[in-house]
Length: 470
Image 1 (spheres, rainbow, N blue to C red):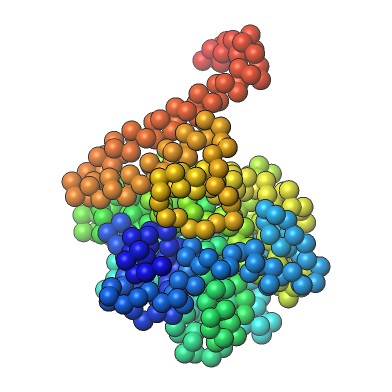
Image 2: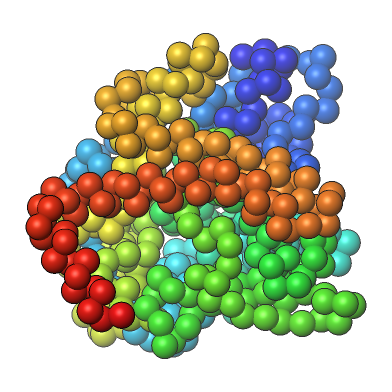
């Protein structure tokens, strides 16, 4: 792809920073929508073939299936499932030692696995996302390198915030050592592609910890929530996206925001249900690239962590992880910790793991076929994916997909206008043109299902029962 076409189509890039690692003519910068994107310093220069190769959505030679097979097919005790990829262990549970679970968004496995790798002398450094302490920079979080457990703990918890890793990967190339890195599916895959091009990266990044990610968000997601509690755009200092409310189920967490209100630093905690934009089905502030991945279970990562969004686990407010293990050394570490009671884990089958991410898989993988079909019908360039384009969706699911696209795209534009007008209500009012339709079609679908399941008389009886309770 030439430079001109890349500039047109870069909205499809995962914006991990991988291209900036291999091409000095590319740097990563925030755009006006609060998303990282590749900036070409000299547009007259041709885009390098290496830069294209290390970008997940622009590489046409490899895909996650090929790379994961190279990595794990010969691992001891390995199994394979078309939906979740390779695995040698499937678990659901939490950390039962120290304060790992208390400090985490979920069951504490993210920080714990790094501690375990350190303790067993398998790594020297951890690459993960931490608060950006630079007072000169309004970007709240960034990828950084931690050298000990205390630094790692400081970077615990999920951040629904854009980051990129070009600067830290350049440090990896300069500083010898054994590294572990954590990332969302496209970022871990980008690391794998970088490793194919650079022996230093391949040798030094020893372990990859993958996260299950519904979709990426722009920085405006955090800013939007803060604005709702009186912290105006530009005044947000820190945010905890997954503050545990111990009297609530795990999926009813809080948002803890610190910022300036009338010149005074204040901290406010709100339940996620009290803030606009927490319906993840809407996809507010979602980048285009998030709609063009088919990797749900981070197929090229050594260990994968996610939330156990299952009724039998969400009642525990402290949080619970699903765990997919592909690397045999990591499996041994986990098995040992389980036998010593340091981890409390249920061994589960692949169906239980899949069930925990059922809606995510339907949108990200299954219904990608429709999004690809629509892009092809419009004559647009789009990434080559393992899913084949088709329109074999029900009318209801097509409506859902069309509305999600409208909501995501509009959220970026209308939020920018709301900031210009200094009027958050303007944003909500403009988005309601789509979100109200979204709610309405789900209500209609629910009513049809109820009628089918109960019949007309059954529905009437249910309505009368409800009236009696009023």
